[in-house]
Image 1 (cartoon, rainbow, N blue to C red):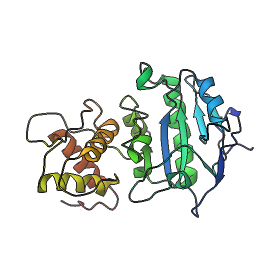
Image 2 (image 1 turned 60 degrees about the vertical axis):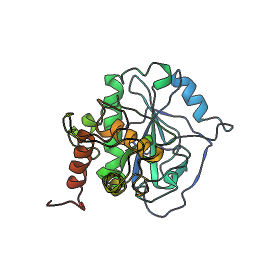
Image 3 (image 1 turned 120 degrees about the vertical axis):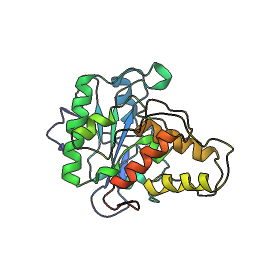
Length: 255
């Protein structure tokens, strides 16, 4: 396999891939953490035919970039999920696994060398595939009910400062009316509408149900990480408004 990126330091082919089921270049860049004890253990798992999982790239703690699947192929990293009504995220995306033991194993900070390598790799992938900023996503964004990675410690703001991804500074936390599990009515439906407008798979039924809570948590992990509680407080709602206004084709442009 010839590496797609000049940043690749090792090629470690995985057998776990197939043909993409949509035409054109991938338009989603999906970031994960491995959630395993070691990078080598994660690499072995991602290359094991019995695991039926893979990724395009693996980034170790020391910044080494390993390519496992060609970008032209459909790696099996996303699983079931959707974004802006688009399912089969595997066919639409490039997947990067970032070595980190995850929430169940202490969830350490991402090392500086690793963050710099992820930024450089993302910039290269986004430029070559012309991936829109708002389609640089967390695994938890496309599957809030199943996934929590790469989590609230991942430095999305650092990526944005380097021109990668869609991001705004979170609105400060403060008091005020908010919505949570069990709440009902038009304000809840409006919050669900905001989540759906940005891309989350949320039904606009006016009931703050479990899928709404999980989507709110996923949003907070990515965009308001200092408090991940699943409550649509003023800070969370304002941050999503700011993101929607900043979209190139925002439904709130000029409001």
